[in-house]
Length: 580
Image 1 (cartoon, one colour):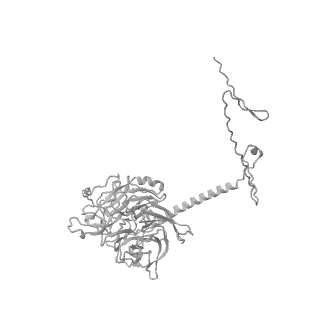
Image 2 (spheres, helix red, strand yellow; image 1 turned 60 degrees about the vertical axis):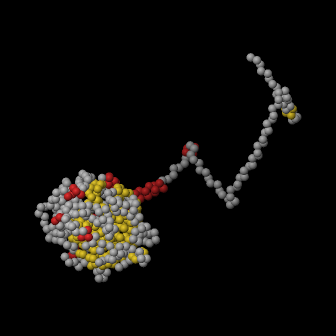
Image 3 (cartoon, helix red, strand yellow; image 1 turned 135 degrees about the vertical axis):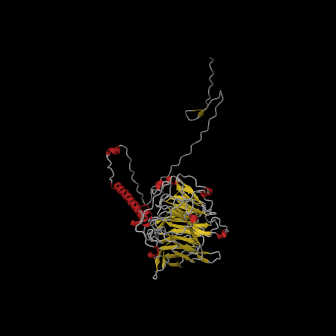
């Protein structure tokens, strides 16, 4: 369908100018964007080491425009990724230093390092990567987050303790994209080693919301599938490290039904064309079926990121949403044999997925040769009771897809002079912002009639209602309210105890207690103007040395003191021994 959306590259200095290779200042690349699900504010991260907050508005003609609100300065190098928590109460930013900063809303009147008023302040710093952080993703409940780094690893962090819970290994090259399943079961990472690792617990379980239980859950987290090849597909599925973009931002659908992976390549089985004839693609994998992609979306250039609208849209010609069939014990999905109109992007016959699911017992993933031996069965389509809208950003184009249409509902090219780095949907699902390394951002705005009516909260199936932005924001607000009440109650108890100690009278001192030898109070001595009298020490006379008197020989007289004081000699007498 032809849409009348409005597109505008907003010509403002998003981030400070930096020196180019030619020595001429140019706008710093905008490397990441995201929307606050609670307030709808836009956040950007740039190569100028700053995180900036914006208000996305419309001018008199209805064209998108922005107003700068605030600048957050705490990074020492480029900021590669910014992401709000599901409830919007925490902002995470990661950059070239390998650190991730967690920002929380600051009390009114707080000022930053420059003395300017600020509404956000740094709460924690996550340190564990030895090199640049390229991407991050929050757990559904906001209790944890996962980061991907140039050090070839991903780390799962606890938000409450700011400590790493587990390091996810398995890549031989940079980790350039991470995604956390909205249902809380899977964690996926994409790397320049041309594979995507899917991690899950054994047995499979959802990430807990309580921070105290995160450590035990992470100990069971292992790589259960390496997505690298597929049945009837020649060669590897993804680009190598020569990809023009430095990001591979993969994403889950808001309901968790499928995983979209960018930076794909496609060659038909038996195609003898050389490598330049390979087609760029984005692969969509059905939940729990990672042996081969379910849908291939062709692209005119290498895809750098995929971002889903947070809203679910009503299907045309459907009276009321139907709840999808539950998962079977083997991890597959049960679907009706006679499914109603399945409108979705065209799928090649060779790209239909087989029936394999992630091993529930934690067994090793099948080798590439074993994948080809798996019996192919008719795979169920994404027969969802609602429509999902998502954007695919290549290095120079933006395509908006709808699971209820055979082709993109919108396609835009020539927006920027450099590669597109990231994209984000507003909480209402009607605005899409893309960032570029040329230092500018573009905004696409849609009317409700163009994308369709979003489902009301009461129309969303109950088992996925918790993924809605409104539900997550309310949950975060409720947790913040309970925490504030608990802190206030603790402060009141402490103040009451302090007041009771001050009001308690000192026990009277009786004669009995005085006679018992209690401590005596020493009255301070009054100090006069002349000061206290200095007591001079009494000199001590030196001791006289006594000269020893010589011992006289036998028969000599020893001097004896006479009566008149004159000495007389008096010699000792020798006593002869008496024989026995």
